[in-house]
Image 1 (cartoon, helix red, strand yellow):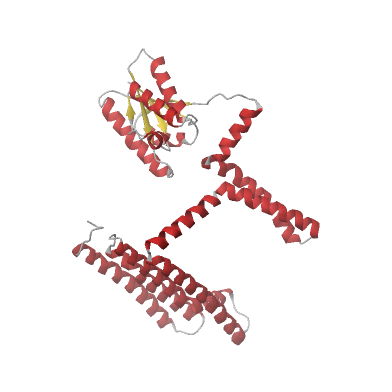
Image 2 (image 1 turned 180 degrees about the horizontal axis):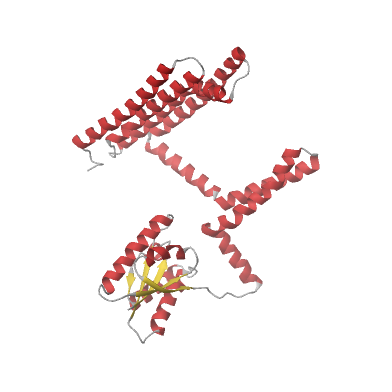
Length: 359
């Protein structure tokens, strides 16, 4: 039996039409193609579905079936897994006893990344990539380029390298410090490169999403909003304290090795960094409890922060020459025991006192 398998890795069919997948049978696939063409006439997956129908009708001499399978939008691993599950569903429905061979129909190299997943389930005779013929006049070229740049999947591939290329020259100008005209040209080129790079990475969308997320946290009364601000302030204080500790040590000892510089910065900042970690983790635990999604293992976070802080404090204290080897061993042992104790304690608590989230 021959199976014509139309692959839509990013699930345009399901997202834009609301149809359940997989779609099995010629009439069902034709209805799905018409529905997708109605919802988005410019979607290339429409051509994939119609190509599958064309292959089904063009091979009347043998037993043949056509089906459409979809993945998920955003995650390649999850998308490949979902395609594999839908292929299993198709094979179970059409025939479990017959030898099935497949012709895979896609619209590009991205969808073809799922071929190993399909090949592990059914023998693939051939792969058909649908390429739509376009007019070659200037207007069609402009429209095609505009569509490509508006597509987040392809604009990053084009605009990000271009933005980096435009940033090379201003970086060279800054490094050489050669004259005002060159600096002005480099600054202008740098601004253009940053703009193109930002467009390619979709920075404006990330900023909009960050603002919307912050607004929702503020209106929802999230404790993490306060704890994150406090944690950020503690991190700044810790960084300043680490620099001051380094300055004091250099004033008393003179030149320091790279290891001593790192130990001094860590020794001065670790207490404040630990306080920041504990504050932010307790805020997150509080929000999870208020959302009725609390689990006992969430309480491991502040204890892990304390354990890591104890280990780093002992290591930096020892390398600065303030503590003995026994103190270092005690700090390492204490941090390890604290982490193990919290893990076991909250695992036991979760098993004996289950909550709504774990249930």
